[in-house]
Length: 78
Image (tube, rainbow, N blue to C red; front, side, top):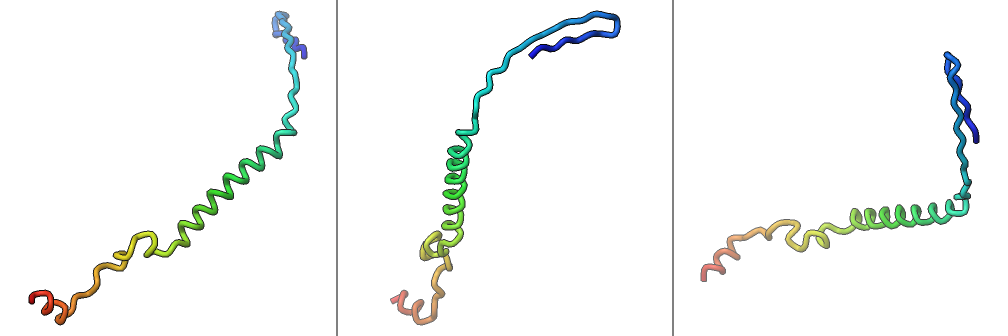
């Protein structure tokens, strides 16, 4: 490629460069597969986390302590 530039007063300059084309189209299917697998794994983990029952995530105390009754309190003092 050659570029020649001429200014209004008559000054001019020329520059040249070369470009070697590297075909990247063979890499496109591999890149799509890697991105698709990463996105699919992330979505699967997010879905799994959201669908987990609260008891499995927070433990058996997730609902709070069991209510105390008068019978249970009277038996605890003895």
